[in-house]
Amino acid sequence: MVGDPFSWRPRRVLVGYDGTVGGDDGLALATAIAEPGAEFLLVDVIPPVGIFTMRPRRLEDGEPPQSAGFFCEALERMSGRTVETRSYVANSAARVLSEVAEEEDYDIVVIGACYPGVVGRVLIGSVGEGLMHGAVVPVVAAPRSYAERPPKALKQIAVAWDASPEAHEALAHAQVMARQTGGEIHLLYVSPPESFAAKVGDLTRPSPDRVLAEGFAAVAPDIPIDGSSLEGREIASTISVTCAERGVDLLVVGSRGYGMLGRVIVGSVATGLLHGAPCPVLTVPRPHSGEGSDDTDRRTASTVTSRWARRPDACPPTTGVLADRRRRSRLGDRR
Image (cartoon, rainbow, N blue to C red; front, top):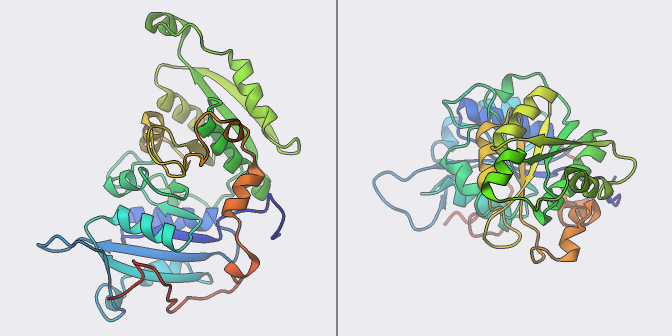
């Protein structure tokens, strides 16, 4: 319930929708990850024809594709839920989604897979890549053919873990999700084989038991958690294989690399997981605090909830389709 620090699930969900099979995968994931009574905004971005537009333009309701019933199938899939649709003309779909999410205070951005690709694998395209380098809210990507899977609660939640501040941020989000769904958390820590570590001169790595113990200590005692120490040269592929073997429902990863604090900045491991994981991948923004600071290291789920939870009147538990909700924002302006 509202006020409980562990009650969070996404209540305002922004979905990138393009009418493809990948768009359907995004819709299926959006409904799986959102709480009952959530609001959804489906956004389609159309590239300009023959010109470069400096500013995204929101299309009128009477303009195609809005007037051509483009969203009819999506609205049918989302029947009984609170849904708004928009279309924009813009050079960058990633920019539109990122700015709408930031300016209108959405909790999460959901995207589908880019086709073609390996069935059952996340394969994001240029839009996903753009979102993963600058979004201020978590971004979750659906694997290919996710819409064809039977509906399933996201209870088996894995975290790509290395005890870094970014991993702590991911673990905090995973803890909130696990409490909401009644799920359990699996920490996956990958270290290189000893022979490889010696070859590259990495002989000072901490013991796996110590790394996992730090994660266990950060989770509330009533949330089931276990951890695995894995060996592999390729961290992303090792984690992806483990997720497939264990039937993981959701993989949570932190942002890495250099960039603005509080934004999603995807490093090489997260990028590999986004392109190869067999389950949805939730990427969270970098911690707002300075990297390596004590408050970032000891991030708890309650601090994440304070950012993601909304006041009671922010999301009325209504159903049906929001015919037209006007919001004051640069991208919401139709001029």
